[in-house]
Image (cartoon, rainbow, N blue to C red; front, side):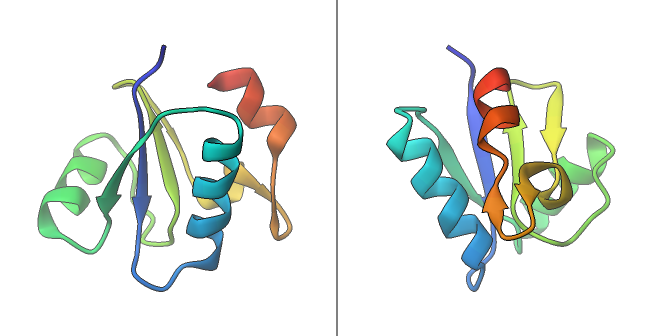
Length: 84
C-alpha cells in the first residue's frame, strides 16, 4: 500500500474533510504540520510551492495540492480513490 502523508494547518476545514475521507476509505496516513520549517522545506524540495493546505503526498513522488484534491468544497473522491 502507498505511504500517504497529509500536510495540514491548524485551522483548515478542507484538511479535516480530507482526513475523514481517507479514514472512511481505510487509507492509512500520517499527518505533517505544514506550518513547520521542516514540512515547508520538504515540500519546497519536492517542487511544491503553495502554502494553502491540505497537500497530499503519496509515496515519495506524488504531491497533490488542494486545487487537485477538491471539487469546490468536496473531496474529489473519484480522483483520489484512483490514486491511493
